Image (tube, rainbow, N blue to C red; front, side, top):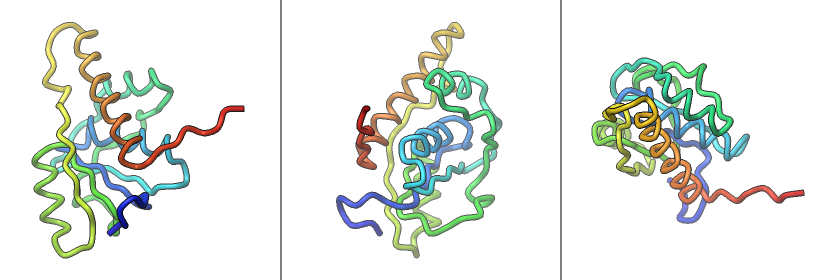
Length: 150
């Protein structure tokens, strides 16, 4: 378990199908903390890649096109310091799987943008809102400091 104020060295992001929220979060964390934090993502159930995720992540210069959704059971790793869950079902699963481990599990309620309706632009706006919320929370929780300019 990480000491208060200490940045975790290994983080798992989890959501329902590892297709939207958790891969967005994992990609953001990898981008903000290159070679500093080991980052993975997983879901409770098997999902399919979501082209809206690729579109909104590309807008901020991050590539998620190679991501393939995987379940908790398919994850080859363990030993995470921190599990950040983005959906209630993922939180329950993470607590169940880590009950005998010394790991922090935090629930970040995060809207599911796949439920958005309307035009393509309105749907993309829902995905952007989730992306931007995750970016802000990750920066705050993991203690991101912008690199010095120059």
